[in-house]
Image (cartoon, rainbow, N blue to C red; front, side, top):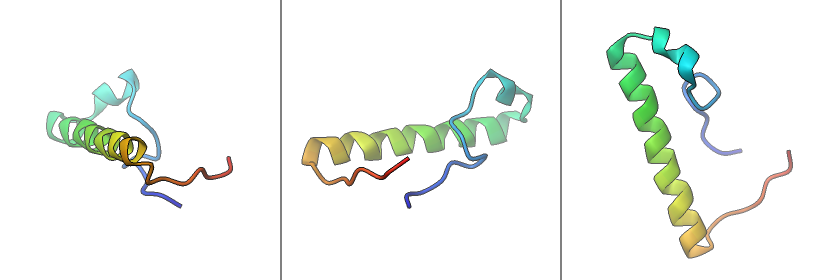
Length: 51
């Protein structure tokens, strides 16, 4: 299975309770993973995993 997010999910507004450093690092990971996903779609380099 693929990489996991820090708290097991994409952050939402409840995560604003995190301190600034942790919240920014969390969102940066989401951006990085989004770029990985876009690259996979662009190159056709991905596998569909069952839910």
